[in-house]
Amino acid sequence: MAGNWAGLGAAVISFLYLYDRVANYIPFQIRDHLATFFHKVVSFVNPYDQITIHEYCGEYMQRDELYVASEAYLSSTCSSRTRKLKADLGQESDKPSVTIDDYEEVIDTFRGVSVWWCAYMRPNSHTISFYPNQEQRKYYRLTFHNRHRKLVEGEYLNHVLREGRDVTIRNRIRKLFTNNPSSNSDRYSSLWSHVAFEHPATFDTLAMDPEKKREIIDDLVTFCKGKEYYKKIGKAWKRGYLLYGPPGTGKSTMIAAIANFLEYDVYDLELTTVKTNTELRKIFIETTGKSIIVIEDIDCSIDLTGKRKEKEEKDDEEKDEKLPSCMEEKDENSKLTLSGILNFIDGLWSACGGERIVIFTTNHVEKLDPALIRRGRMDMHIEMSYCTFEAFKVLAKNYLGILEHDLFDTIQTLLSEVNISPADVAEGLMLKISRNEDVGVGLL
Image (cartoon, rainbow, N blue to C red):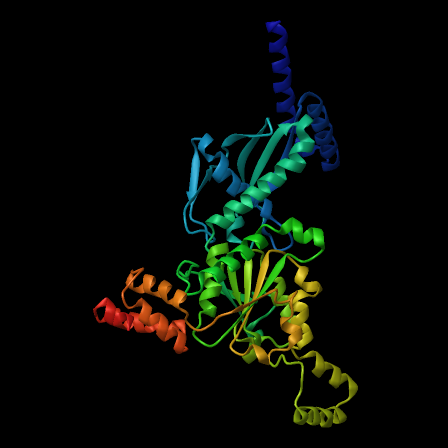
């Protein structure tokens, strides 16, 4: 028996040696047929299948989302099972990420089925690339028994994608975006620029009536958990909030508190830089899920009353009479209209993507067109009022660190008689504290 195995080994070695010698003289068509035949022979004796997940794909060679999710999944789930690791601080994370190193294998178990992950790196020295990080092409190879193929291709890969996305979201640096002026954009530039979102506001520090805060928090939690419900009722997974009230009542702080509570990115949309409805749609498409799209002071950004003054109508009529029909159509299409905004909120384009919150703020809600703020577009109207006694107690706790004081009864009476914004109260408290004055003096 030992002699037979020795003879088989010698035959295999001889075959490989001869094939290496003559391979360059065999036409590539024949080599392809031989390679296909070889893989078929191996598949008869090898019961394991493989799935390769490349780092880059697509026309512009962007990082594949499944690869990124797999990397995050292995980092959080499987890195403790191997001894050879690598760590890096990615651009989208604020803490180091540790995952398996190249050519290292790790075993994962799903529903009692074992699968093998291995990270590979293939040099890309035969092509010229404009992407420096693609000099070495990375990929993961997932190996599993072929009788579990249906489970791996369906449930397991979806599990990896879902868990990896969650890990990426938890570890990412949240961002505050602003749209770039249309005059500065071209086909290669992004429509958004961003900085790190570091606003410290929370619902605990927000000066507002506790009952109203609880109502808003409950609505946000219901929205986050409502993916299947929104799909069931046939609505886009989004929610609209209208924040209205006098200046200094905490509308911007409320937005920051919502973003921190949900751990969402914030897109601050400046409508005055958007020239057309088409440009607005392009801007909206470039936003991501788990985000808040904010239009502050919408009544000051653009005329959204849906009405035109008589003088403007007269001027337009005189202008239209002088312009040919083609110019008239071009001019009409070059304006951002109320209908464009409405389609942006809850039209067909609003269903592109999911888990988005749209927030409008205004100091004069009566100036807005009713069609813009009706229920279904702005689902929840939140009045940001002048400082109440309950809101004052939150400010006193934030700035002075006190929960009770003998002057609270007097202050409650004064607040019921005078309209003062939380911002003015906070500024007064901060000014007194900066002078190291007595707490009682600070309260008054």
